[in-house]
Image 1 (spheres, rainbow, N blue to C red):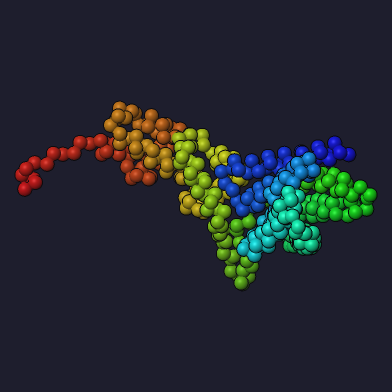
Image 2: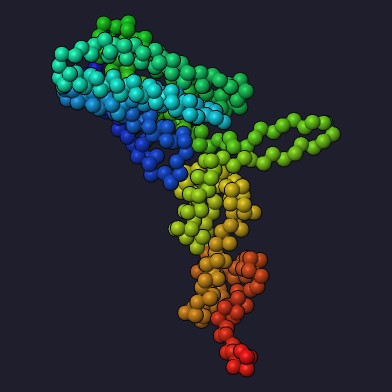
Length: 369
């Protein structure tokens, strides 16, 4: 059982650290990603603390200082997972931070006591009081996390109901196993660590699936309202621009401009979506809703035309054919280049080059006077 427990805890810690590194590499990080990274990192430190155990002496409590965002962070994650509006606000962060501070205080006092820095001072009553308070708050947070899956279940679409069931079954079974089963057995500490490692690894895998589902949801649009009168046609509902959309739009613009992706003639919306780790439809919505462009082609062609204008105005490129200028700017052929350029600039590329490179007429003394 010792080897199995060690393997489960080590695997869970490595998987959690890998999750954090994966999120850090993403160009766009939403609130739910940050919460998930905090939880995964804290869970990894908890697994390391249990792996080290008494072998590191008092330093196990020092490691425990960084394992202060497990059940409290997962409660915030559950809120961000299933709520469309107001998922994580100030009071929720304060509640989660209060539990984290209590955990840090508990581990700090145990560390001081183990190091013998408080000789003659009994910390047992204080630690016992903190443990009792933590037990009550942790139980409350665990229940609140489970209720996030229950809340709004009936009104949710069928795919969302399936994800909520997966969450409730996985989350509920892990909590029950880790709290009730060890209490029924003689070697409760050993079984507690075994079930803790297995439950941690299982919930990491399930949560990855839930996070992937959440990233595919489009929750920024308002639900359609019923028309006031049967004879009136319903008004179109325009999607709201959320803070996450603004962050993602900045990342999209920076990606295209800094890496000059518009110079790729075969560039597609899916290419940008893959780079940002978001669905294709969301990139299209950002282009039309946040960047205020008619469509993807118009936005990319605008950048291509600006690049072509710079090439046409450079004397060093005056002998380049217009077709070469267009292809160097990301257009696949001359026809689309001419049409896009004239629509944006109001003249053909040849006329623009002639005006840009035309020598200025000398000003005579008579004209000047």
